[in-house]
Image (tube, rainbow, N blue to C red):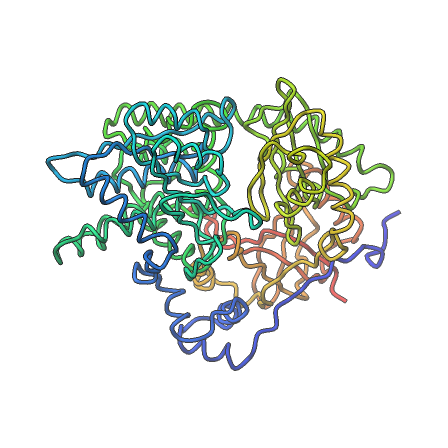
Length: 606
C-alpha cells in the first residue's frame, strides 16, 4: 500500500528574505532580474561599488600584496638573491596548490633576474608516500650542501619549526609562504619572512587565499618592484599577471577555499584567461581533460576534470611531473606528461572505487537498525587503502553520512590519515584538542595540520583505537542537531515564468561558484506534474513540471534508489502540485538546447 504524502518527513528549507529597498537599488544599478538582485543582497553585495566589482572583476580589484605581513622583507630577500645569482630552492607540496605555487614562484623569480645572470632556481616537490606533507630537514641538508642559500616554502611551512631551526643551523635563509593555520600556542617559525595572511598580526584585507594565491601575491610583489618603466608596468598588468592567474584560478578552485572576495576575482579572471591557452602543458592538460578550446572552462570543469588529473600525480606517482609539464616549452614532452597524468587519474579512480566497496560495508554496519549514523566523527582505517586517495575517501564518507570523517592507512607500524568535515565542525580544532589532551609524550600525533574542513596527520598505528574513541567523545560533545541536520539553504523563490535563457545567463555571471559562493539553490512553489514520474536507468528520476505556461524537466540523481522511493511514497501523479528546490542548468547540446532543473528536494504543496 502506498504511503500518504503526509507521512513523508520534510526537511526544513531556509529561504532567504532580503531587504526590499536594497533589492530595488541593486536592480537599478545592475539592470538585473529581481531574483538576481535578491541573491546579491543576501550575499552582502549591496552598495554600488560592490555590485560593480561583483559583475565586473578586474585586476584593480586585487589587493596590494605589500599589505601582507612579512611581504616587504620577503621581496627584498628574493630581489637580493636574484640580483646576486644565489641558488634558490622552492620547497613545494604534492597537490594542485603546492605544484602550481612552485611553478608560479619559479617563473616570477626567473623573470626578475638580470639578463646576464640567469636565476638559479631549483624546486623540491615531496613524494607523498616516502616523505609526506611538510618540510623535511634532510632535504634542507642536501640543498645546503649543493650551495643553496635561500629556501622559499610554498603551501607549507607554517608549522615547520624543526625545519626552520635546521635551516638556521645550516646557514640557510628561509622564507615561509603558506595559507594553513599556524599553531596559536607556539606562533610561527623563525625565518627571514613569514608570509601568510592567516598569521597573527597580519592586517591583509583577505584571509582565505590558497597556497598558490599567497605565492602569487609574492610573485606579484616582486614583478611589480622589478618594473622600471611605464611600458613594463603596462605589460605586467596586461599580459604577465593575467597569464599567472590561469594557474592561480585552477589552484584556488581545486583547494576549495572560499570563492568570494579576492579569491572570486582570481577565479573569475583566471577562468576567462584559460580560454585557448598557449602554454604547451596547460593546453595538453585541457585536451586530455576534454575541455573545449573555444570557450573558458567552468569552475565545475576545473574542479572535476582538470584538478583531479593534476592531483593524480601526487597521489599515485611523482608530483614533480606536474611542475615539469607546466614549465616545459617542448610540445611533445608536454603532451607526454599530460597523458601520463590522465592514466594516473584512471588508476586513482580504480583504486578509490575498490576502497569504497569496503567503506560502504562498514558504513552500513555503523547505521545499524536505526538507519541513522551515530552523532560522532567517523574514523575508518585499513592497511590496504592507498595513502594517495585517503582525502578523497574521507570526502566520500562525509558525503554519505553527513558526519566529519578521518580515514587512515597503515604502513610499517605507522598510520597516515586525512580528514574532511561538515559545516560547523572545526576539524583542526578537534585534532588539536585530541592531540593536547592525550597522556602521551608529545601528544597522540607525530604530525598534523590543516584547517577547519580538511586535515592531514600521522601517528603510531597502535594509537588509532585511542584516536577513534577520543574523536567519538569529542564529536559527541560538539556535533549538535543543528550541525548534523541543518536546514536546506535555499536562496530565492523564482516563478517558472522567469526561468528564461536570459535569467540563466545572469545567474552564470554570479559565478564562479564554489565554497563561499555556492551555486544558488532556487525554489519554485505550486508547480504541477505534467506526467507521471519517469525512471531513468532504474535509479534516477525525471519529472515534467509546468506552471505559468512554462514546462521544464527536473532530474533527480540518486546513488541508490532514493528518488524512486520518494516519488512512490509521495504518490506523485499527473496534476500533483509540488514545491521544488533545484539548481538551474543550461543544456549545451544543440539538439536539446534550453533549460532543465537539477532536483535537490521536493515536497507536495500544502
